[in-house]
Amino acid sequence: MNKLTTNEIVKISKIIWKALGLKEMTINIGGLEPTIWKDYPNLTILDLIKILKISGFRVEMTTNGSNLIEYSRYLKDAGLSKLRISVHHFDKYLYYKITGKDNLNYVKKVIDNCIDSGLDLSINRVLLKGYTDDIPRLIKYTSERNITLKLYDLCWLPRISPQWKKYYLHWNEIVKSLVYPITKRMEKIDNKYHRIRNKFYLNRGGAIEVKEFHDSMHENFEICKNCYYKDKCKETFGSYIYIYPSKNVIFCNLREDLNINLNNLIREDLSMESTSNFIKESFEKLMGRNWINRIQFGKIVFYINDICNYNCTFPGESFKYENLWCLSCLRNFEITPANLLTDSFNKIKLIHYN
Image 1 (cartoon, rainbow, N blue to C red):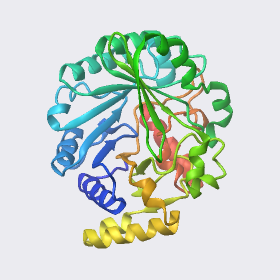
Image 2: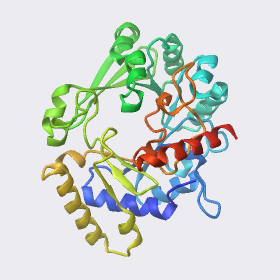
Image 3: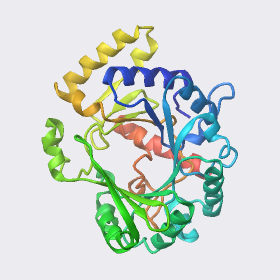
């Protein structure tokens, strides 16, 4: 397994935070599946959370929840500020058809354990057209537990373009029919540079959250304005700062070509100031002079390892590269030379099926 070590994660976090002048010291431990990560000799995800917390960071984590039962009651004490659990369908059979795992009841138990421990928890759900009949049950579940359900549009990627046309559904269709009628108040959290966050507080508890994008947002930044993907992209450049086991730093899901590699900086024992200045100069060459205004409101997301124990495909589709809709899946390999993609995909298959 290709992964980042504890020392690398802490060092990179400090470097990026200082170099970009980020407004928040927040680290989101994300893909592929962070709970699988282990560091020599016996550090687990709990230890990583504790170390990042001690280092001064607010720590959040996104997971599918399938490997959390042994950690669930200890995450808050370890210093985790927020947990996001992806639940791809609330019907047991369709959950299996999408994820390849028959463990929805297990994930529900994990959710309850985390709530009982007092952890701030939300559920992530990517909407797939034709597979939303379970949403009323999921909303009811959210309301009963007084947590937040985040609805996401299916993101377009070149490799899933045909399937995207078939399965794409805008969150507004769900909000209009199922959320508005049971909403007591709405909160709109604006951001000058990135998407607006709309939060609908439900009559009986809990909330539904969505992110609102307008095409005009691409006109505010030269890279977006002139990008050949802008008609498909529903994100803003720099809203997330992705860091991979390869030590590549990327600022856009569709533009892996715009990246900076930190390998040499991590190896060298340079001062924080020297490292920070080098990164600033690199960013200016890559993105122009106005990069800092946009990037400093971004969030750091770590892909701390390159494997996942789920294979999230479109329901009923075969498990192959172009059917993997998860934004995180194989992303670590999509920024490698094309001739490595086949070997990397075979590596993922071995992990899933062995």
